[in-house]
Image 1 (tube, rainbow, N blue to C red):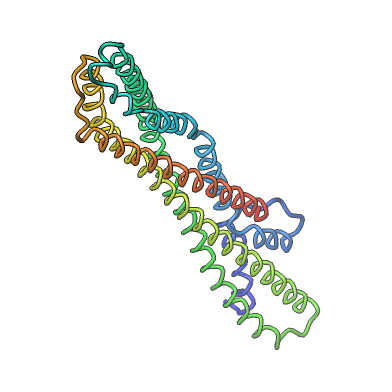
Image 2: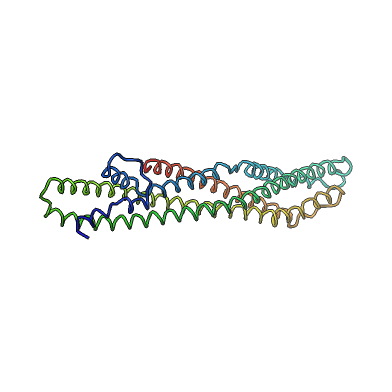
Length: 306
């Protein structure tokens, strides 16, 4: 094969069609130019669709129910007044103050218990949603990574094409004496410039895609961690609280001196755990917001890349 034929083959439709689907062009030269400008188009289209799936998942998440129940539980826990159990002795029994205050304490305990049960229900619903979503998100992220690797491979291939093309252009330049051959050189050089710009854009897309991919995985991991902590608090700290406080309230209601040994510590431990859950939830919401912004920015880059 002659050098000129070999050079031309570097930018043939057969080569570029592997990675693009160009619009119709009015001439072979314009057709090849469009293919160089559209290199990687199908992979970009796939990435855009996958980005849309991740964005849809993000919009479907509603942290409000969990946040509301956590805030309500934190409030009712802080409202529990152990001082109500201090009205004891002869005067309290005579005036009925002991029964009144112990009844108020029992009502507060019941309110906390009801709120904890409402939280448990929301966590159960969240668990079911996240189980289904986690599978879909993982599949999307795997496909996302596959498309990134495909574009990476395309960029490497394009870099090799350019290196070979430049070498051939240098060799042909010395022998190009006629206007037709010089025109062909100019067209091939211009096509190189088009492909250079396209490969740079594809590299930017891959870098942004990898950053979004990593961010999405990190957010998914944090999401799972927050849910796991909520489940653990419900199974351990809430259960421990429920095992102590209703019995304490019942003891006070019967006019028996309530034993606060360990009860206040259990209550304070649950308060700390709920505060930590709230803090972790706020951290997760910040990550979700950052991921949403990153997905939006990536979408704009994909739109620019076409």
